[in-house]
Length: 181
Image (cartoon, rainbow, N blue to C red):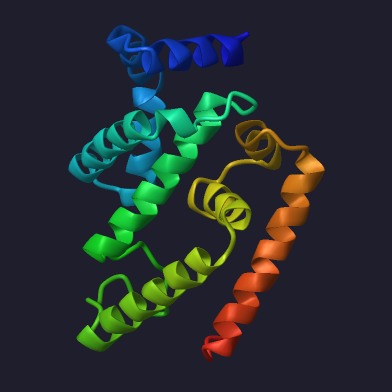
């Protein structure tokens, strides 16, 4: 029922009904903002990304396929925008290291983390979209397999298979770059 309602709103928006798209924005603005906030860990950046997501969704609305859920479609846009924002702004992600909490990291340590983060983002971006999605949902957002299956509209078994393959591919990409665990 929810899927049909969203599809109707998309069709109405494509036919020039501004209020239909506004309804979609109101419906999904909080989940999209929260996703961006989880990924970026900054309220202002998350608000900027959420706004960009809805602008891009509006611009690409004709590419929405009614065979899929609107939420999954816009969620993918949000994940990609958040990854791009992270890469563009070169934010430091939280990380664990052997450095004592009382000690400030050295410039070399900060640089090493930045390089590793950039390599990881590059490796993730080399994966196909299907594999990127499962990695981001599982490791950046701590989604359960069931939640991932729901968002991606695929069976849970497929989620597990894609996640396994994605991890293997990431390992191969990083190993080829000389980055090992």
